[in-house]
Image (cartoon, rainbow, N blue to C red; front, side, top):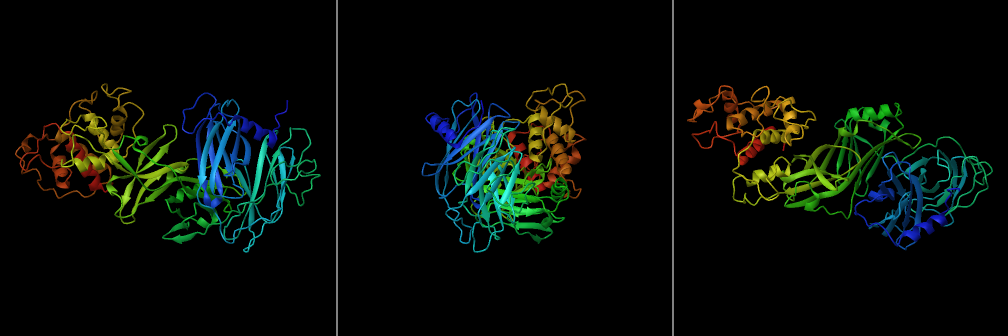
Length: 619
């Protein structure tokens, strides 16, 4: 039996299942729609809807969107990718403001997923293109293809191009009112929509749309069926259709071009307060890093990254880079959704979805492997309204449904926190405040522990206690240094017989050994659970200081002369203890006693690590 689905049939099916839906946020069952993310992009007048079908790859997914009046405004089908992911782009018709309802079903889905989103601000913009009341988008389906034609939109500025969208794809058309789109799936329903853009980048919002099912292979084509469409005569690839000026081949892409300025050897794009997307022609960047300044974040792509974009585009300088920084509205970050259970958490600025894509002249996204890690993200904070030492940048882990710390170094001169990140994630700048019941506000180490907890360097014995006078083991201090220096934990064992695979400290000890920070007590043993002494801490601190580029070595004065126990220092530790005291990384337990062989307590080791980071200017 043919799998051809009409708009009426889809609407009937989706209506029949709306009495039993899966609420947002519920755990996935067999045959479920999960990980749904809905992003409203006001500047593009579009809504991005993505998710996963648990049945896996190659499964049909169907979506309907009802507008604030309760009318079905959008029906579309697509096929999940190799990981089960799917995506739709929805362009609301008519009124922009209000609450919208999304229903998603598909193969093996017994109970569809249902969610809502709200658009709180309309995109009305004087000078934006408008469509005549009788505007229509005509469609003639052919062999795995469709030919679309439409009438002119109008604008006081003129029309620079048209954008045609379907599923999660789009193409720009220049100097034409027709486009031929190939590579479509037989017996699949597609909804196409067209919008116009003015030379200044202002978009229409009520362009016509049409729904059409691609015929089975070997059959004749048919006309469009749906909102704003008129049935065309049967034909193939536009033949025998009532559309004028049909064409074949790839259309020309003309995106709304964002202005690029050269500032301090950077190609800089500055977006307005309501703008979230920059479309940058590769030729406009030149041999420079690219920096996109949005209201919620500043995104910088290195010169090497830009060179890789150009190489992926086969040196075509007319290809485009699209950088989007889309603020997320209505999301509240609570203490239970943040790693390591803060006592309180405050969101600074705006939660933001960050993406960067390369688009070829045919409007298709081009793969660019291995460059996203070179993206620098800088999130702003307002002076006097944040505790800068407690700020960090967090990324949302969709699978774990938790915000995870990825780092961040504050730049007080620019009032921003900077980190290396990846495109395609949701980010937030958070003020992480952690308190321990056994370290009251009056305790000398209270502030130290707050700062290092915010940097996810120290953790308590549990969520409420720290054990400030407890001794520190060799494994614990090694892990502190690895986290403080941002060294990635190693996957292979360290080679010590007492550092076993699966132990919590093995990745940190292995990484520290590879970095040259530590040694064992012998070639075979590390003694991870033995307490670490104060002279051993001094040696490790100086190795970490030198490895991290520390250059401010003090004059070779005898800094340990005042300590009565200086003769107890091991020969291998004497120079490092002298340097650590001179740099202010450590001090004696009193003016006259260093406590050379004494176990280091947890608050002492925390303070020493904070001193190291402050000396290296890594906070």
